[in-house]
Image (cartoon, rainbow, N blue to C red):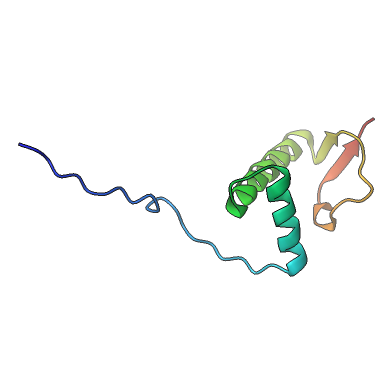
Length: 88
């Protein structure tokens, strides 16, 4: 006696999210996708979320101070709530 199996729905544990982005933001997203050789834009966003979560955990543990490597020429204005120190 054989059992019939139901097809597995790979989308069952996923939620579709639609983002409105400027052309410049999409260009940056696509550059990141190419730079890290990501399989999709969604993979870039998932990676970015993990990094941002890590950064916020570090900030919470260190009293809003995070030490990073060499200071870049400019910082995103969205990071003004975090005090970032650069060494090197």
